[in-house]
Image (cartoon, rainbow, N blue to C red):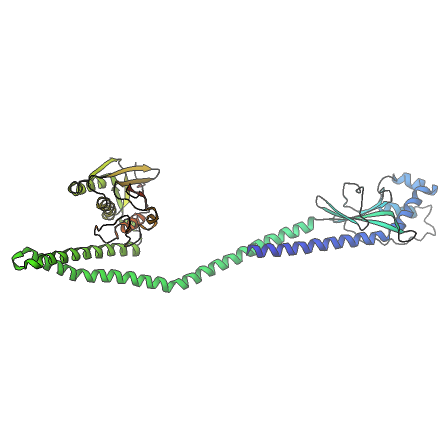
Length: 442
């Protein structure tokens, strides 16, 4: 749209300037017809003694311009008006004093006569093209036309010059107004196009969004429906495991596998339900409350301390400055539980997991750093994808649904924050959670 408007403006401006040049050229051409008469009258005025009184009364000077009315006024004096017929000069008439001006010069480029009220301050240039010369001074556009007289053969001599001048002010104002109208038109058209594009985009996306909503609803419904039979299966397995004498020894290992699989399936359904709720529900700002992050992290440290000790991992939760965020306590607890579980899961015995809390401007920064197996650089962009597994970096089975990090990122974004990660294979990983500090924090 902008290119089109620029092109239109360029074409219109070029055409208007061309029209102005034609008008100035025509003015100079018509004025050139009067040159012989004007030169004759000028020479006669300053050569005949009978006009001395007129020259003195008007204060005329042959080295300066005079107007046509001053030049021809000699015939209107009382002494010489009787019986004299004045032929009209073929000058473009009437000239608009504020927009045009015409000047006549002799062959030595000395001023003769001028008409109008618009003239350049500079004298004629030293060299002038026989076909005419264009030049511009500020907002004045001028054309100098040499008056050529034929001599022997094809030769010509210059007998004088005509300079026609016209102001660019009206044209400049006209083009300025055109630019404004063009810009307004572009804005209006762009606005209508944008609104139309938005409407068409929404119309085209509505079936896709409806399908996504149906898919989310199906995921939620399926998770709910599958929980009941899974609960029954887990209850039946628990009963059988409570009476080992009723189970044949060769079936006990199979029973353990079924119990483990049903537990993983239940965890997967719970995770899918959480993700579905995060996708479907809007921010519940009215139900949020201030959550002291330092206390929440300290409680999680105590909760995971025994698990870390059993795995031979040193869990450290320190440098917790008092900070509060606004949100849902259960969701935030799940966020950091998933990160701690992930860190402990992929850190071998003898390693360390460290949790710290700091502030950065208006945000709280929670870091969960481990000395585990790390993540390959080419896998980092995908770690928050659902069901993601880095097979090369994590080459042994640790269980889990593959949704823990996706849930953690979803909860962080739900709370107007995000999670970033830095990692190196066999060099550990550092997950940093950035959450806005509660505005009522002192």
